[in-house]
Image (cartoon, rainbow, N blue to C red; front, side, top):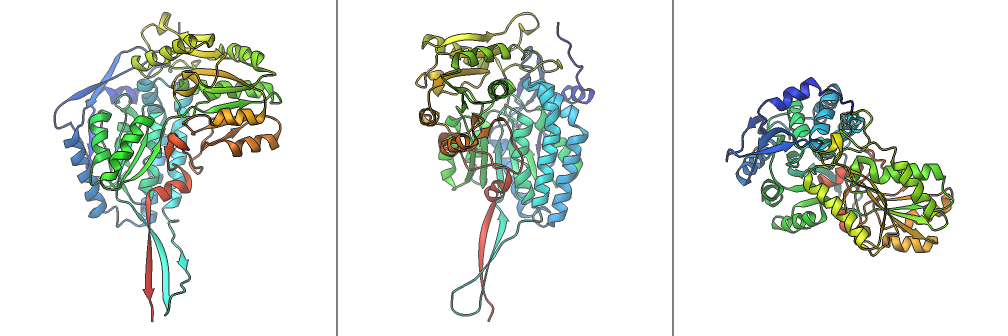
Length: 497
């Protein structure tokens, strides 16, 4: 029997009321009157319902954002005033951190041990970008043209930014798509996943409480093919930021051509995690498990292709399987839970199907598979799964599974593992475990991936750029990269004679 923490009273109160969309500073229903269910992945129970937006609702939201950008107080606001609002919202994230964590655990299943840290991380993110409000400087460029020419640049906001948020880590993914565009003066229309809208709707209330002008942030709920598509194709949206599957990212990129939208895409991954025989063995075990089992493997940069030097291959996989037994599978409200449920029944079926495919292809299941006994019977749980005897041509080594499944692949030398690691259409993350730093840097420089962790994994910060090579995405989020992504550079020439 699991010991489950009681739901935060404010979170319980929040989901007990009729939830609406946040458009133009008001809480509204979908014009169609349709609503969609939000269910708890830990037991399948109905949590609440939210409006099911379509194109008409998105049109209203984009119009509200455009009005706030063109004629509202937002573009006239001094940088320090905008910073004060961002800092106020950061404070509110911390003050309401437990409630926000409980909402994410409730509709996504992520253990509280993780979601409780997200409130602080969200506050840090907004405080970092609050500092950028007064640092949007241009440059003075010496001119070689005849006459007395003053040549300078300035950064200006893009306008209306659309954001489409995935269901994995919904709160933090939303924060990354709000902080930078707001800091530089844009307005936003943002859509959470239909699976996990709760924490972002609560953020809408906090945005009101902080005192943001109406229409600066608009939150629409609904499905990707309707509400998401309407945002991505809207002719009055200047920028799209999307995190999700590569297939949908390609569609968004195609649709952006209609008005040459700026696009940032953070897409799928099949990251290589490389364990050399000279690695700190215990640290490598910890990193290998953390890289793929954290967040139930529902991470785009999960280290799901585990390359292990052949000298230690059999022992390392056996020990990793044993190590994974320490990762308790269960309800995210149980303090001892490390592996929560996958997001829904469809995702559970997908993960289990890949485990079957792997075995059909010749992989050996060392540990893992379905977890549906006792208290877990009604939820969408999959045990940490370790597959051996995998080669890089198998589907389980080439396709993103998005669950707690790791494929062990042997290698013999540095050149071979570099070739194997890069033999993928993806390039989001990668890990290296070795005590030889010269070798570590050589491999890190050779990997065709946007992020590399050496003797660690899963580290991100608001001031460090994040994104992928190849079909793992386009552009970067966080740091200066986000400032570039959400501003235009204007060049101004002045004849001062």
